[in-house]
Structures are given as structure tokens and as C-alpha cells.
Image 1 (cartoon, rainbow, N blue to C red):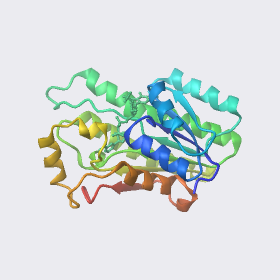
Image 2 (image 1 turned 90 degrees about the horizontal axis):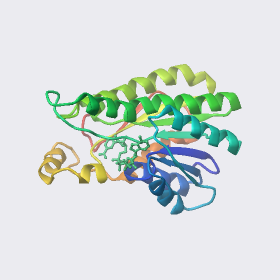
Image 3 (image 1 turned 135 degrees about the vertical axis):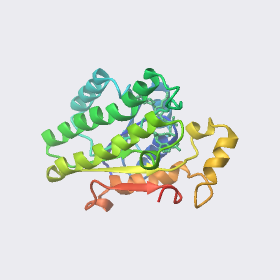
Length: 244
Ligand code: NAP
């Protein structure tokens, strides 16, 4: 489905991002695995099937790092045809206790990065006259909210608004922009939660289980590939029914 296409996945060193890299590589893509830690990006890239994968160390919230990635892309002479913005963090606290740093850090990594990365890659695609599919990993929490996550929920709602606006602006330039909204997925992020909290979360899910990272990767693959050539500005909920 992505035969010989070049795809960038941020947050590709762990969890959902890593599953997306695996799924894309199995579908014929060449990956630029972009992550905060070079070791994590390299571990993912080194275990992918196929050839032509690379690892790139980047803080996606830092404009200088994103500019460095742009130079790397320019020097390779090929504009990517898929960008997945998957890097994300949580810094949970109730509103009454949340610090400005907890608010700002989550804004920077989860939302500012989507602007920086999407603008950079979209500019490259327009300059090259090549098609692009951007898939943003938002969250069902961006739609329904979550206790202790005013910062996180605000970023994930922001990603949805960004996705729809960018989709409108870029539709005539052969660039599609969509978002996937995962529910509660089994990753290091959720495994770090106290079992009692996790059980309470699962009891709210109509399918009564956590999702698997591969189930998110399947949805992202659909939106990244030409299978969804007439789909832009949409939000695809992959939640076991949570938040429908
Ligand atoms: P994860 O396992 O923690 O993976 C996130 C990856 O992003 C990590 O490798 C992390 O590196 C990297 N990262 C963090 N900050 C970064 C930065 N500034 N620049 C570049 N890379 C950075 O998390 P996940 O659960 O797979 O989540 C992936 C995405 O799905 C996130 O956007 C998250 O909000 C979203 N999501 C997850 C769930 C869920 O249930 N897990 C549900 C809905 C949405 P470090 O490990 O070094 O920090």
C-alpha cells in the first residue's frame, strides 16, 4: 500500500509510533524514524523489514531541530510523501494543581510540533510538486476530555482543529490532512498507570478492552495510503466505541 514511498514518523521510537513504522515498512515504505532519543529511533529503524530506513534524533517542539530535519531531507533529494505526527507526552495534574510548565511542555510537544513539522514538510512537497498525506495522532480525549488532563486534552482538540483547517488550505495542492483519535491503547504511556485507574478506564469502553498499537497503525496506514485518496479533514476514532 505504500510501495517505495518515503514516510516520516515522529515518536517512532516507542509505542504507537513504532507500530506505525513496522506497519508502513511491511507495506513497502522507506522510513525516517524521528524521535527524541537517537537510540530509540535507531532501534526501531534497525528492526524494520526492507531497506532504505533511517533514524533521526529530533525534539519536534524545537524549530531549530525541525530546520535540521529539513536540511536532511533537502540533502537526500526526496520529499517525503507521508508525515505522521505521533510524538506526544502527558504531564497530568488537575487544573487546580497544574503548573505553567506542565501546561506549556505539553503544548510544545503535542501541538506546536504538529504546526512546525506539518508546515515544513508541506512546504517541501509544494516546492517539489509532489503529493503528501499528513496523519496527525490526536486522541479521543481531545473530543470528550479526561480528568487530570486539561493540558493534554487541549492539545489534542487543537490537533483536530489544525487538521481540519490545514486540510481545507492544502486540498488543492495534492496534500491531504487527517487525524486518528486513539482511545486507550496498550503502550508504555498506559502501562505506567495504576491498575485501578486502568481498570476504571477499560470499564468505560464498549468493547471492554484496551486497544493494541497495531490497531492504530492499521487506521494510520489507511489514511496515509492512496486507499483514502478522497478522504481529507476527517477524524477517525479507533477506540473500541469509547466516545462515540
Ligand atoms: P510513547 O510510547 O511514550 O511514545 C511517544 C514517543 O514520542 C516516545 O518515543 C517519546 O520519546 C517521543 N517523544 C516525546 N517527546 C518528543 C519530542 N519532543 N520530540 C520527539 N519525540 C518525542 O507514547 P504512545 O502511547 O505510543 O503515544 C503516541 C501518540 O499517541 C501520542 O501523541 C499520544 O498522545 C497518542 N495517544 C496515545 C494513547 C494511548 O493510549 N497510548 C491514546 C491516545 C493518543 P521518549 O520516550 O524519550 O519521551
